[in-house]
Length: 89
Image 1 (cartoon, rainbow, N blue to C red):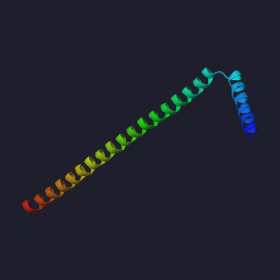
Image 2: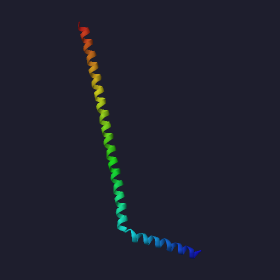
Image 3: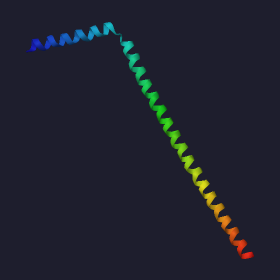
Image 4: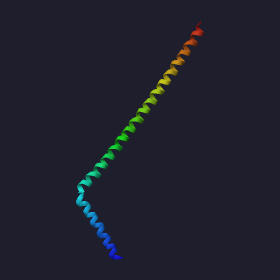
């Protein structure tokens, strides 16, 4: 049993060392660092885009509310003018 475990360990070690003779550690580090940077950049970009879209929607809501209040004010002003015209005549 112990002999089989040692043999298995040696096979794993040999495959591990042969892998690093084919691919350098620097190449793997570059791949992983590049991948992490890409994902980080995508996250930051999506976060900024989301924040800007929420900001734009809030400005649109604020604008719509101001426009609605202005239309209500103008409507009330017209009604008041009609009422004053009727009472004056």
